Image 1 (cartoon, one colour):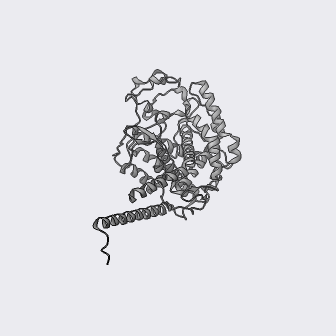
Image 2 (cartoon, rainbow, N blue to C red):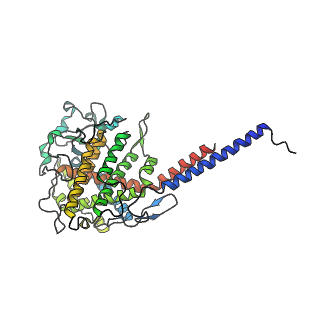
Image 3 (tube, helix red, strand yellow):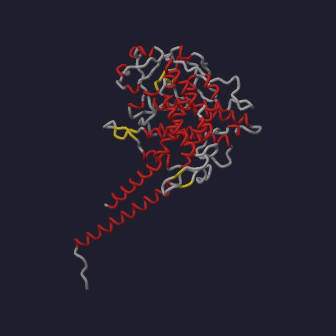
Length: 455
């Protein structure tokens, strides 16, 4: 009769069995995670609409963008070739660079207890005596040594200059879709958007979560049902698309190593927050096309607007780029009607429904005062105003599908609208370019996890 292996050999056998069991367990966990992540959030349409599947583990978006009039391939091509380059140049020019915003407001819904972990969360406001003289003149430019804030952070410098010449030809009127009083200049400050980029700020936790919970739960349902009216579905998709875009920008410019101040792309975050939920990507494209439709619909108005900052060379460049954006023949031929707003507000209860949704969107804009991070509040207010301006344009029309004679835009609305379109354009471009590569990174991380579990 065999006596079996000696104790040392027996222990080695047991250790090998445990390693195989651990490896099998890790593999099972990984497979379950993949299966669960592919389910995503409940969708108001089947996941097969608006796109098919490419290689295993990656999603390729093809066909028409749901509720829009353009397909994914056209949007990606036109965005990369035409729209994104124009928008990138536009938002860097003086007229679109400075945004008037009310940063210091009490939250109307709950005490502000939000805390930011990073200094990058704040918008640095320099004292008036630290503003260089060119800031007090119509945008004659800044020298690098003068772009110094009181904390020594050039990227956070704030421009609070108010020059009446800049506002020539523009009215100041409130937007019925948003809550801020845009005519109250005493409460406003001027921010150089180029020096305060939308990026990761460390604003997380219950305070940040409560903002989105209030937006979804109280003003538009997070999981819309099939029998929901088209207008409320559109509101949900606009907010979801904006949410996706914000998440994309956080992942695009992320603090990878705080000790080394190393910034870069966080593709794992992009995958976890956006890419693994097809509905979020679809809503991002929907919101982009919705805002693009508003810009093109206001073409006559925007072409005739006076982009006067006191810098003739830059102002002529602004007017030229605006015309290129509005009347680009490639865009007009490939996607002449990005979104058809005429199908909304039909039926006898259309006016009442419009008032209801307008009230809900005003509440969403008021929630921006509760954001506990200054830079997040800045970009939240700008993008919500931009979306409110798009709603104002698309639903201030007469029977001839033209903007009526009473329609007016104020300077700040146009700045917000174009900057929002640029943000969405950047998000669509980044998602299109990195979708497959992020899947590869997730696979590599899963494989690394398996190896650690097996060792």
